[in-house]
Image (cartoon, rainbow, N blue to C red):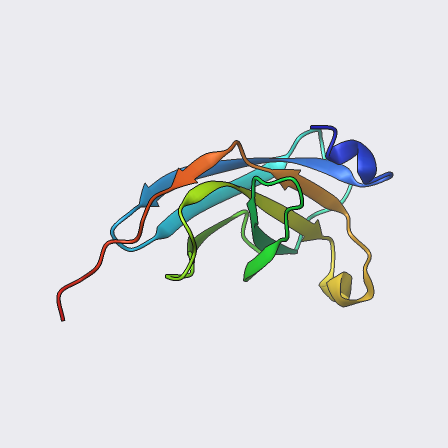
Amino acid sequence: MGHRAELDGVAGLLVAIEFADDAHRALGVRWSPAAPAHKKLEYARVFLVPVTPEPERVYLELVDGLPRASVSLPESLPAGEYVIEVDAYGSASWGDGRLDAHGRSACFTVGTPLHRAG
């Protein structure tokens, strides 16, 4: 996919899934600049994206000052193929649309949720 090419002037991020806890539908995500960064990235927004012809990003988490997060996937999330996308910002200006870096993880599979006995 030529996903990053759509984001002119935005630095690339390497995004990796560190762990997956299927029982709790949790993921560990880590990101780093794809090239030496000219600016420190202070904030990041983490999104879950289905691998479909018309994907719609689902916001998961806002991260302050760290290049990693543990995120919970919605229990109602259907089984399927997904990626994690991270939008990173050099300041709290993320609300005004000044994106500084972006990246996406490799594809991973979310299975059917486990039904817990109540």
